Structures are given as structure tokens and as C-alpha cells.
Length: 377
Image: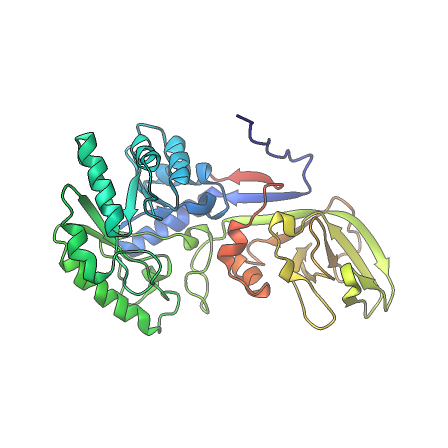
């Protein structure tokens, strides 16, 4: 089996991604305090939202988190290996069970708890448990309005009645919890509360990151934050209550001066309106910097912090390179100096908004060419 490529060294890379595990833990503790008396899990799918599953899950487990959610069984296997084969932590697989004995066996081997999404999955898991001669716990996803995954409310009793099925958690997913005024929230909370009443003695989970901040606080027995753990704002339009976890810095490769009327980048879509100093950095869309952060003559793009000064992008974001207008930055900049693309000043949510997307996509697209530096863990 081929080995995974070695991580880049600090000396060989053109950008540094600093991940503050102390901030990650502080965010989890804050959310756990808000969710109490409910317990607080952690969603670590998509490589822990791009920051690295193994260091993130170890830091959270050390802080006291005992329940984790991943999307796929392959992620669950990684999570179990990171925690230790004998670890008592619960790992739920959100995307349900695909057909096949190998999938069932993988869940059993790594002690993963499937989140069952329909009657066929419930029957398959119950049959597998009976064949093994021991009860295997499972969670049940109930669809309360997302229409994505889950058992419909009309099927709930049939699912709960499947012989040999050991459901110890029922859950659902919020449609618009980041918008406190959205009517979906009240409808879903009411529907889920009614469904939970049909499952006496079974723990319940509804609240994602943003739902923890809703006035109704629909945390039930278990909250399961994701994005907010990693520094994303769970309360859009209000100050972010979470600490930044990710900081991205890139080295200046080259500095140059251009005159009025000269263009920058592919297709010459950005034109200098004054004598301009440019810095080229070795980060592009292959590294997860959204191409939509391009700056043209008709629209602003991304920005970088350069010695404490916000400096705009100039021209298109290329695969491996981005150009920044550093005319207003200190005059003594030199190749090798670092600029900050993401952090406390330019947040992941701001980058998402400037690129016409969401911070979730920015985080989960973080590239593998960065030197990754973990602090605070």
C-alpha cells in the first residue's frame, strides 16, 4: 500500500497554517456551558472541518468530550484509531448505512454507532446485531423538515418497532437555525419534541452550533456543534462569540512596482490606477483560497493583512499564486516576509462572504501544501 505523502516542512513551504487547539477546546467548553444540562458532543467530520481530525479529536477528548460525530465510516475508523481502539468514546456516523456486509463489519470493528436513516437500514442493522448475538446500539435520524436524510414522522413507530433494534439516541437536523427569526425553527422544534415523546427513555439531539444560541435552546439531551468549534460565527449578523482557531500566513515571493494603466493577472482584469507596489504570494486556489476572491476593475476581491495594514488582492487568484496591492503597507517589505490571509482580523466568515460562499467551505477546503503548526494542545 503506498504511503501517504509527507507533510511539508516549514523550510520547504510557502505558507503556514496555524491551528490553535487551545482555542478549539475553549470553544467546546463555552458551547458545553451554554448547552448544559444537556451534554455536548463535537462534530469532527471532513477532517475536523479542515483543521485535522487526529489532533482535534485528541484535544477535545482530553478536555472531556466523550461523543463525536463523523459523516462516513472511514472517518470513524480514523477517529477510533486516534482515540485508541479501547477508548470509551462514542463515535456516530451521520450518513447512515450503505448496503453491504463489509460496511456493517467496519462499524462493528471500529465500534462505530450508525445514525440510521430509513427502515431498510434499521432492519439491516438489527439483523446484523442478531447474527452477532449481541445488541448493537444505534441512533435514529428523524426528518423534521430538511428532506435530506431520515425517517419520516409517519415511519417513526415502524422503525422503533424493528425487532432487535437498540435505539439509544434519536436526532434531527435544523434547517435554518442560524436565522433566529426563521419560522422553520419553531416548527422543527415542535415536531421533534412530539417525536421524542414517542420514544420514552431514549436520549434526543437536535441542536447544532447555531441552535445552541436560539432563544428556545433546543439542546434536549445532547448538543452537537460543528462549525462554531472551529471559530465560525454561529450567530451571523452579531459579534462572533467564538475564538478564532485557524490562522493562515503566506510568504512574499516577489515584490514589484508597476505604473498607472498596467494590468495584473490572467486576462488583465485589474488595472493600476496609481503607481502601485505588488507582492506575489505562493497560495492559490489549489490551496483552498477561493478563486472567487479575484479582484477586477469592477469588483473588489479578497484582502490580506500586511504589517497591520489591510491590502487588497489585485487580479485573479491563480492555481498557486495570488497578487496583493501592498502600496499602502510599510515600505521595507521584503521577499520572505509573511502576510496574513485568515485569522482574527480577516475571519473565515469574511472570506466566505467575499467569495460568495460560506466559511464552512473555506475551512474544509484548506489545502495540504501548508506547513501545519499546532499550538495550545
